Length: 195
Image (tube, rainbow, N blue to C red):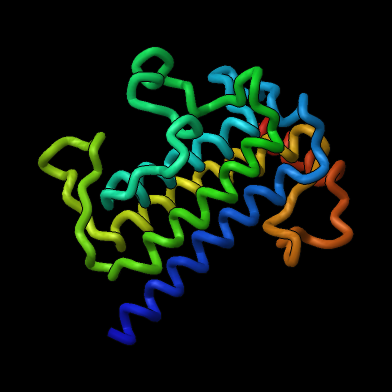
């Protein structure tokens, strides 16, 4: 049992670190920058946060028989049928700040599931095919961490393209100090052009 508790703590810490880093990547940006699509498929920073909020509600709520207590906030299956991208952008009535607030409230809801269930607790993912819908809390924690880390990588690139901010997290940039980025980019362009 102590081993499971230790693993749960490790997984929960990784989940929270990714959550924190996602919100850090949004700090200091304007409402427009947070809502503006930055890819051909409409990826926008506020949308990533809204998507992760709804993702955590689904995986840590519905999967374990715990509906989100404020039904008007989460995207419904009917909304997804009308707009499959409904959780990927802030609507006219939402601000980026309200989406961020929503996500931080979802953390407490998701963490309650994590805290009150064993890692081997069984759930059923409603939107997965029946043959693989039965899951454990451990599987779902890993699944959400991977999904969040993938989207965090997208956010890293978008943020760097907006204002040049790059780095792993507020405590560790994981970037070389005193790097001459112009010279480095020139080197990479030369290597690419000479192949």
